[in-house]
Image (cartoon, rainbow over all chains, first blue to last red; front, side):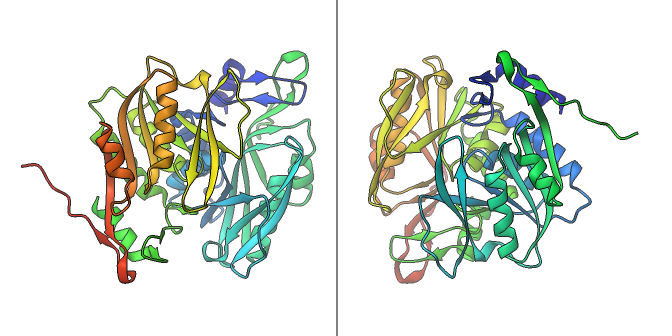
Amino acid sequence: MEALKEKIVQEGKVLSDIVLKVDSFLNHQIDPQLMREVGEEFASRFKDTGVTKILSIESSGIAPAVMTGLILDVPVVFARKRKSVTLSDNLYTASVYSYTKNETNDIAVSIDYLHSDDTVLIIDDFLANGQALLGLLRIVEQAGASTAGAGIVIEKGFQPGGNLIREGGIRVESLATISSLKNGKVEFLEEVVAR
Amino acid sequence: MEALKEKIVQEGKVLSDIVLKVDSFLNHQIDPQLMREVGEEFASRFKDTGVTKILSIESSGIAPAVMTGLILDVPVVFARKRKSVTLSDNLYTASVYSYTKNETNDIAVSIDYLHSDDTVLIIDDFLANGQALLGLLRIVEQAGASTAGAGIVIEKGFQPGGNLIREGGIRVESLATISSLKNGKVEFLEEVVAR
């Protein structure tokens, strides 16, 4: 998605060979027009998959998820992060390790909002090691629901999450895939366009 | 806002005389169409106030804030909640006590995203005791910015936050104001319509 890549190049801050900060439009300040375009793009890519529900995770996943839900006209559920969740009959839960923060959080979704007849599109802001996405997939699985796939705003293609999850048979659509952050420079994976 | 009040009556769960749970469309599952209507209503009420930025707080404030920002065509910043924030030259911070959770969190906004020439519209999901809103107002003050006011999705009018903040001279617009949750029943404050 060209508008997104341009924004990343203009405003992203490369803090190291593996850390890209996009606080000016995605993770702290949010650009609502860009988020609408992101939502339109996800909706277009997944429009024929029978999505009945969007699943995301607080906090930075919410804006792109809500815009996608608006366009696909389906409800959005965001998983809550907690230091620890008391096991309960009323929650689907998964443990998610964050490499960035070096901490494990439990994520939880109420059983009221995901059902076995749902087809779930997962939306998140970043895909790097894939831990959050794996946690969300486990929650979909606990609900007995189907997965249409995952829509990711920015994938760090030089980290293993994307391959790991695609090899598991999950469709992952990333709107910008970064191949390298070396020397302070953002490089994108060229998209292979089907002819 | 009638559509919102109907949704509260249909789907809200009154858990006690002071607790209303609206997890089905605002706090866990989100109804994107309703959020767009909420955003349109806030945008309409504040359209002549020169808003340059929306300020909200993770996580449940983000959806209504982003929709308002989309329609007013201004950026949205959401304050981050932390157990404690290390004082830093790069952050505006405030401590916020939550009566619901009986805990104090620090909230923080990067100095990069609020400036003295900003006119800030604060958007949040709930107003009860007003602690979160007071914290956000302190952050606006630290930035030296102006406040257009606060747009609240649901105000618990029987708790003191709304009066406290209006008496401080801040314009507060609530789309549904609840006067009572007694006997498991939601009652709304009648809106006084100017003639």
